[in-house]
Amino acid sequence: MGRAYRKPKEGDDAKGAAPMRPKPWPLPKGAGQNPSTPEQSPTKPPSRRAGSRRLPAAQKQDDAAGASRPAPAPAPAPAPVATASAPASSPSSPEFEELGGRAKAADGTWIAWELVRPVRAPGRPKAPLLVLVNGLSNDGFQWRGLLPTLRKNHAVLSWDYRGHGCSENPRDVSAVSIASLADDLEAVMLDVNARRLAKTSRVTVVAYSMGCQVALEWCRAHADLVDGLALILGTPQRSMDAALLHPLLADLAAALMGAFPTLFGLLWQVIFFLAWATSVVSHPVARRLRLVNVPRADFAPFYRHLRRVHGGAYVRMLVSGQRHGAMDVLELMNRREVPSLVVQGGRDFSVDAKTGAATRRAAPRAHHVFVPDACHAGMIGKKDAIGAALEEFLDAKMEAAEFHKKRLMDVTGMTVSPPDSPPKPEEGEGTPVR
Image 1 (spheres, helix red, strand yellow):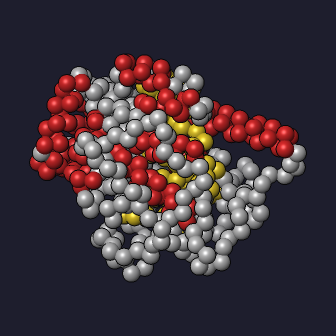
Image 2 (cartoon, one colour):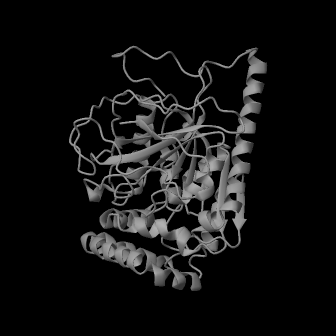
Image 3 (tube, one colour):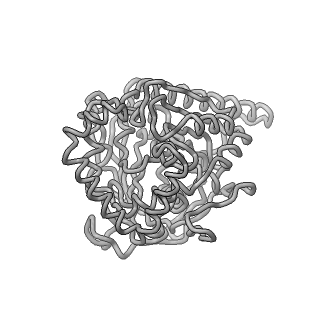
């Protein structure tokens, strides 16, 4: 499933037009044709990473009372991965390779992922992993302008929600929730780990919009693996309160969509089509209403992707996002002194002043950045300001990690770092623990 498909060409970042991934994605051999639903996959029980555990003080939340969280999806067995050949690169001109694949979710849905990593010279350690978590109805286009910053010192892993981007439509729409999407993220990382493509024992998570809730829900069960956390233009809880101006209206909307999911799923499909078809007119109106402050040309990928979004999955995510809360996880991450960044925008309709203040109280140790002119599309319209905040955060996080590493080596008397990973087992010995 994993394979390298393209080495970025010089000037891609400047042009801003190069897609993050090709379509369609590869599927396992014998699994059917894309984008039809594959029925077979070479799988084995995934190995768990040392230290991965649920935070004891945090309680699991889901849409329905008493609903049980699905187990993490099994990861496909390691398969040979063809890597892109690249010449030796200088520090001023690094070479990157892009690999893609799919992991199987708990309900059998195929989740598409992409990994962009520096070409690794023999004997050099793998780059630390940075995982991106998209916003609702996004397929990752909003990260493109920030890729040069994100991949400077990291391997960058991105993935698509069920019913979004290159992922399959959900096999079981009723199973879509913030909790199940967090499990999809874990399935993706288990798949990447099984293929030995990146170090997943410590990860930095960068999330946008509703992805903030998904990221925090993943942190609920895997806090010991988090090396850093960045929440950009999103809220940890009740995602529709600010957009609908009042909690009662938001709860009423969630109740109606939860009661009639099929009807609202079809309604959203119509709305998505009309938004794409009339974007030439509707986008200037949205700019007049100050909902967005970016040119239509820069926002065109969003409108094109709306035609692909699965209405049923979108409804379930909206309902789950309104009923979900992860402020307790943010508080616990703050007490554990996990390096954190919170970016809020002055024109962001999804986060009101009350929620912003609650987020600052929950994470007083985090680095809080307020961008006055940033709307909810601020990662495009204000990418320089947000990129600068991310770069400062990532540099400070790595500097702190190096300091603690040196201090540990001084205390223990070690002269060299521990090996990057244990020797690769022979075929049949099982999947390595990440």
